[in-house]
Image: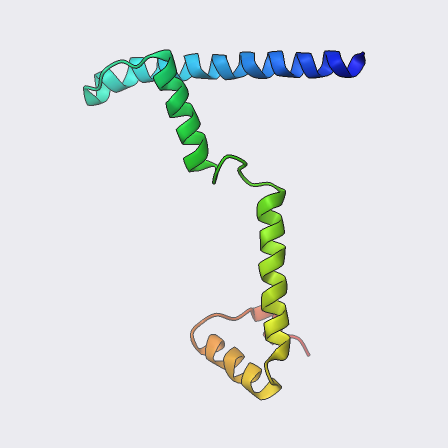
Length: 113
């Protein structure tokens, strides 16, 4: 029973927050944009579209930064580490030397005894 109330409350407050955010977006647009850029006023649904579009564009997708992107990062770091270990020591030293010449080096690593 508690779980049902929690889910119902979460849906209600989530929806209320989203509707409030749409009204705030619409109010700010209709207050600022016509005066600043001579743009027309927008409706509730246009404000909802702007809010969703800005979420997608500025959060890196629908999910934003979460376990999907962390999982991808771990995957690619693992693949690069595997490739790096397969490179012979002489070639690895040449790569490190070229990177240092180009300014890509960690001073903390070079000071190790």
